[in-house]
Every structure is written in C-alpha cells, then in structure tokens.
Length: 71
Image 1 (spheres, rainbow, N blue to C red):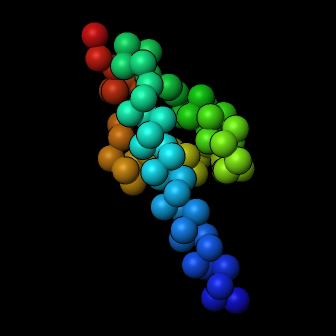
Image 2: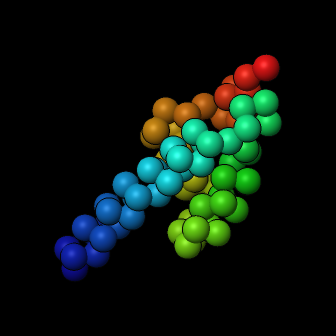
C-alpha cells in the first residue's frame, strides 16, 4: 500500500543524511570506498546494497572515493 512508500522515502532521506555525515567525517587523505560506506551504513542498521549506496552517494553529489581525496 501507499504507507510503505512513505516509509521508504523517509528511510531514503535518512540514509542520504547518514551517508553525508559519514563522508563529511571521513579522513580526506583516505576516503571511504563504496564498499566501506556500505559496511558503515549497514552497521548503522540500514541493510542496503552497495549499488544503492553508490546511487545515493551520487544523489547527494559526492564523487567516488578517489575524487574525494585531498592531499
């Protein structure tokens, strides 16, 4: 039913926020790969796949790890 969509939307927003927090807090000289981001997100109780993490990462405008690297 429609109530599920709402819950999914909320969790999408939550996961994106969580992802943003993780990326903001990462070590910029050693940014997290999508695999590592997935492990962290899963560890926070969001059981989502790596490709979903990659999709959300792109949605929040965060490039892949090697492009987030700062010297």
